Amino acid sequence: MNKPWEHSQEVVYRRYMLWFVYACVIYSIIGFSWGALMGGIAEFRHFVDHTSHGRLIVRAHTHINLLGWVEMAIFSAVYYIIPRIVQRPIYSLTLVKVHFWVHNVGLIGMVVFFTIAGVAGSSVSGGAQAEAVVAPLLATMGMFGMLVLLANFVWAFNIFRTCKGWEKSNV
Image 1 (cartoon, rainbow, N blue to C red):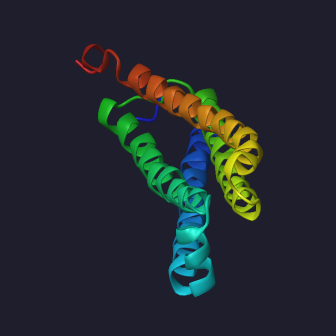
Image 2: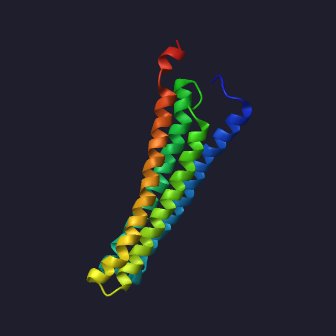
Image 3: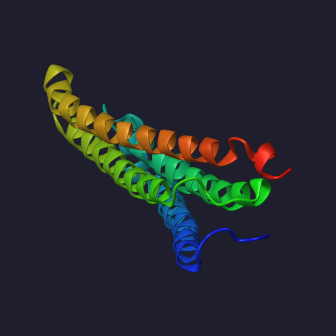
């Protein structure tokens, strides 16, 4: 493939593709370990299955696997494949960087606040008191979730702009 980028941009692009892969690996190890602990330790399993807000800890585990392990793997693969298919560089290297950092900050915030809400909600006597404790934590988690959504839109925009008009430029 003819590389239309300067060498320094190619190096930065490859670095970020690898950071997506590294993040994928780290999140998978965390998620797999978390799942093994929830399944393997009876007290933990009972806590997440039978306390009033323990399911929020399961949601944290689910999100670290889906948005961390799976999405990061998909992002790195698409960032690698698309420029080769359309035979031109990614539309914006800056957007790749923004995507990486906003997605990670959002995901980590979601996981932390899901977990805190699960522990805090389950340690309170229940009912309205538990909901009063959990509601602001879940609202904060939702704000971090919006960062992940924003990052996904940034990614989609960058990929679509990279692909737009490929037929004309490769005739």
